[in-house]
Length: 171
Image 1 (cartoon, rainbow, N blue to C red):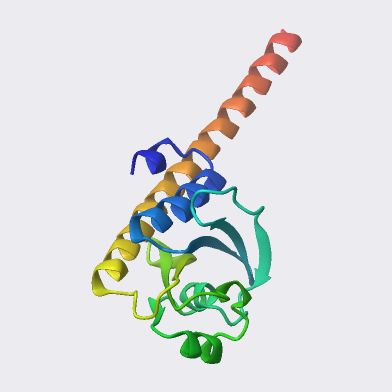
Image 2: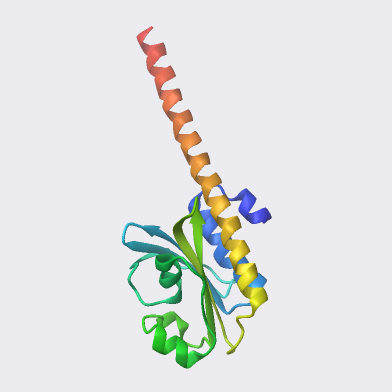
């Protein structure tokens, strides 16, 4: 939670969530996506230790656990590799995954994104892991709201500075 408290941009929040949840859950890989129109802007952390990929835009209609959680607004988990391949054929990043978990991220009751993790072993998505991921999504939503408000405040301060400069120049 210290990392989320220090995150001042939505990209920082995404990075902290994608990396931190991988570590907390003992996952193989994690990702975080924000809904923008009919797309999902996804940041991926790899194994939580290496560098993250640059965010990519994918259609919200893509058949992955992350997109399903963001699109449908409920927790999605898959216990077996065969089920993952069958239910989510677009989950190419799931190669090597034995199970997967994705949770929606909500702000004010509205789904604004999702968070997903996959695990090497089958059957790894326990009730405890689902609860931790859901809590992380809730904390992430609060951090995203703080980042949004911080950005609005920064923009307002810039605008006020320009107005003060203009007023001084006109005086």
